[in-house]
Length: 297
Length: 334
Image 1 (cartoon, each protein chain N blue to C red):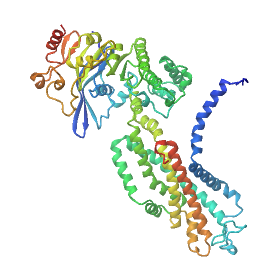
Image 2 (image 1 turned 180 degrees about the horizontal axis):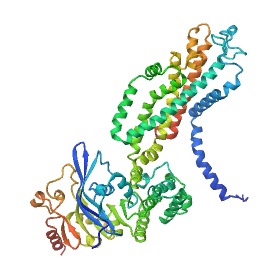
Image 3 (image 1 turned 45 degrees about the vertical axis):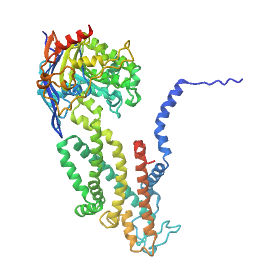
């Protein structure tokens, strides 16, 4: 009989255990194929938005009248638009705008929504006031409301972010508030109160971190909705002003020549679909990862 | 006589509900001496926990609860303190531990962080000092390798461990009074015994008074020196622990005693049951609150509510004819 000597280093085992615990989240992430797909799409789009401008040899603003409406070729990979500008370059710069607008409005509405939601959940006399304001804001269809805000603010990329933040903050506030209302009844909140913690400490230090997970999921969806609304606004001419490229106003330019230059409609449209799909897959996956009970599977 | 540490006089806690005002604690009076362990027993819904939380004024006074009476901590009426003053009492002079250790710790912070926070709310310490104190507290409450545990999250600890952490947290500022609201109910029996031992030890070491709320008379017999028996928001009997177990006076207390299973008893015999259910708080009878479930109740009991009367020394009972009942029972046994 052969005796196999197993040399176990106890320190090594401990280390592996800790590693295992940390990789649990990673493994759960990897087992969710849809979420991995979504993440890859988003990472690629972000890379495109960040690195793309450095890689492309064209200028998104330079008009070359000779090369108007050229079909996709090896020189212009996705063709050119009605001013002879390289479409791929326009789309890359558009990705920068769309991703930036989406990310910034998701971040800002998360911060504002968190503040409003938490305040409303803890101070009951403010609850009614804040929530009625939110209800009022939510009563307008998002796009209509955004157009109205843009009309007031003026067409500018920063104003799109402000408008979208105003549109989406109430939604985030509602989510945070409903979660916070559950958390504030938890025993650990009562326990820290019985230890002498002040109201401010309880809200911002103990309730807030417990609302982050639904907030994170919501923020992802706000991101994707913001991309759509931004594209819509730009399409309608109320968003990012020309000549700045944005997927929405490339589409808008393309609609006049849709029969002669299909690429001007299809490619920016494809990028909008891809980014929204990627973000939604990521959001769904995050929800499953954070709260396994609500898993869609 | 020395001034008691905590003196509750005619405390009433009212709640606003959709069906009108409900009085969950109705005129309770008792006191806690320095360093003593006072048991508060009674069945579910009799107002034990409400009493405990009223002492710390944990209910939302703006919308749901209102208090009446006096809660004097070393002569100072807690019900007259401002919010900020109350925050200084909580966790510092009077601390509390809760029934369910599994949900009493915030899942997003390490236990060390939560301990340090309690310390730093009340004491001016640097993070480093607070961390050392946290480790010492964990060691004191019998948690092995506290240096490592201090940076773990609540979900990494067992229920018994978490209750130890809660106790460590409650003791962080060396309070004069600890309110333990069924601290062992959610734990299994061996852990229960360990936690009780720990509490007894700490009570002796630190000279801290404990109000021990439980429905487990076995636990009362083990740890308490004096007992208050509650029924439907009122104190029905108060006595030293030996006296309560040897000569219970109130029919309700007697019923509770008979409902304890005896290890050497006859197992074929069914345990005694107190018939009926506790009346709802919004339908409290006008007479003695226990009358509808009491086998000795007569017309007097149904009409007029008895007062808490002194039997002997500090043995008090709220019953019209506890003396007759005891005599009758003695005769029956003879």
